[in-house]
Length: 207
Image 1 (cartoon, rainbow, N blue to C red):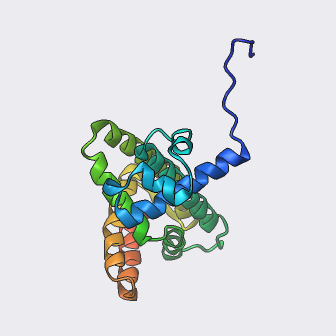
Image 2 (spheres, one colour; image 1 turned 180 degrees about the vertical axis):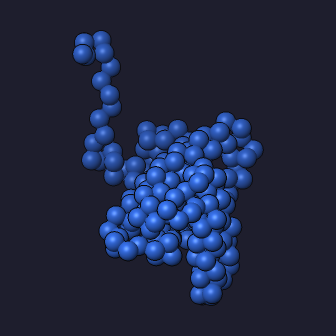
């Protein structure tokens, strides 16, 4: 129950939401073009068409802005994975399940460069590194139940969900670089899919 002395939560107006989104979009362009370490608040504001005041009324720093970008993209990715696996045939195979998930996780050149540079930045900042690790874990533990449900439909049971999840993250990170280095090479993408199938098979068994 609120009293006269209780502070009211800040209401997110449509205009404020639009301003915030324009800053996020502009930051994506600036980080991609300049590199995260060379980007400034002024550059983001100039690209978005706002003042520093508009920036600092939404974000405290470029670090916070990046984390908001990451959260936004993670939400889109998770929604894509859910949608890809929700509308599935009754005779789902392991290969088709992997294909559906990979289609929902695009390998984006600009975003990969941004995240790689921010990760290097975070590795020099223990507090920020802990924040990133916690968010990675949260994303992983959101994805795993979705994947496990799809694998159950494909007639497979996961022996160690945590281990499989970390193995899949490692494969995604490693093979993303290979795909980006040879974007027109379909054999690289096919090898990426086969590797995912192999790992999922290794960490699961037929029911």
